[in-house]
Image (cartoon, rainbow, N blue to C red):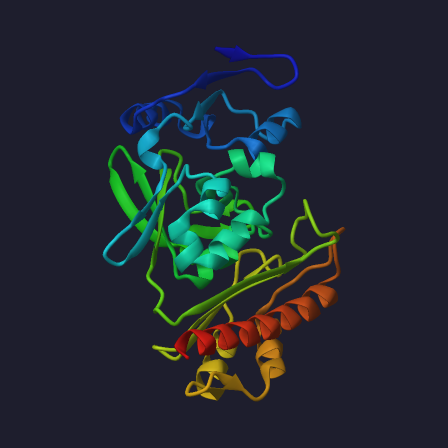
Length: 297
């Protein structure tokens, strides 16, 4: 099939087996475009930002879909839609911040088509699921005809709209470890309106009292999602893990803001982004500690 007129002409393939997708990737190399949900791809084609010779629509490959529990945690197929992630009972019960982040992406129509693999492959600094995956210590599984490999999300995302994915590779799954039974999580974002909004700043906070750890993932305040190691270390030392209290959450927020690398652009100033992420981080820590304390009671 050849698509013409509004978009550049390209060959369209719709494999239903991974081996067939790998064969097409080997055939076309950098001239082949991997498409998951397609909501970003189609706009890029129309604007002629991308002009592939072939588009490989992966939507028919059933083995790349679904949420599965593993002995170590959870595995999400790359073609699992954001709506499916938002509604999945396992994710809602055990990884609520990922369900919350998926439910904040754009509109219901886009969430019905968009996938977690597509969110990763697009590598937008403002992608809602990305700071969550960083805070969850997630790994991305990549596959090609020659084998498979795993990278942390931090290793996989190399810059704005750039990843470590090779031309012959596909994202096949995302994996992350289990959270402790008393763990607590929050995903918060701010934007220019309340719905259908790209994040001006976002923050994921994960608290695990059993391990006395706090993990933070930041979005829209750097070229890639960021961690805040100084803030995480401070929280480990200054949270009263016996009763879930912290004397100065604003210090935590300040340290998180110091890890940010924001820019000025048409949506916000760097100064506002830095301020916003400090407020979100302090708020997220307070909420997580309160939730963890209530769960342990």
